[in-house]
Amino acid sequence: MVTKLSLFDNFNQLTPYAVGFDRVFDQLQNYASHNATSSGFPPYNIRKEGDYSFVIELALAGFSKKDIEVEVADGLLTIRSVKENDENDSNIYRGISYRKFNRKFTLADDIVVNDASLENGMLVISLERVIPEEKKPRKIEIN
Image 1 (spheres, rainbow, N blue to C red):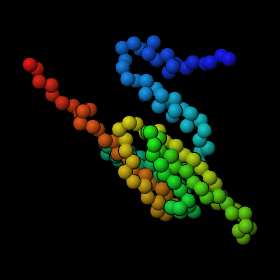
Image 2: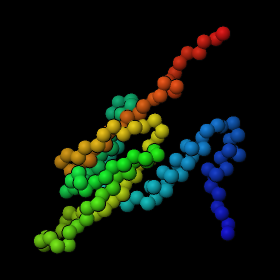
Image 3: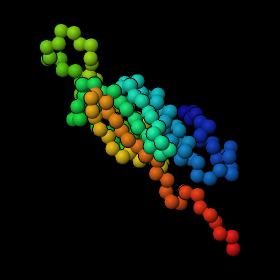
Image 4: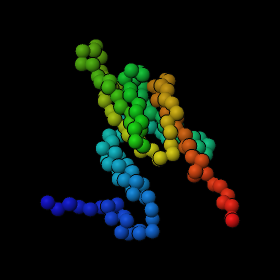
């Protein structure tokens, strides 16, 4: 069996002076695989509000809080639904369809999810970039 190696697998050979970037390239590879499996539903917006705040909005008309799960794990924000069309309803025509979806967003290491709210058919997720003290600029005293 022939195993195909990607550029990311040989990154250390290409850049012997870079340290600790292997996780960044793993995240890029995960991002590409999540993007390839996306169905395009539901439609969404990503807004930047200020230097450190972001908002993800998903259009979820007809969904309620009990129909949606929001989960954050290992740098991955996952929004999924459990609601589907009911075949036993009395609709003559169905123009609004409820279907299961699984939307994933890859988050940077310093992004935290603050909260999520659902109002008027719009799921709004607030995110914030939190810079740890050790990454903030500081003066180094010369001895």
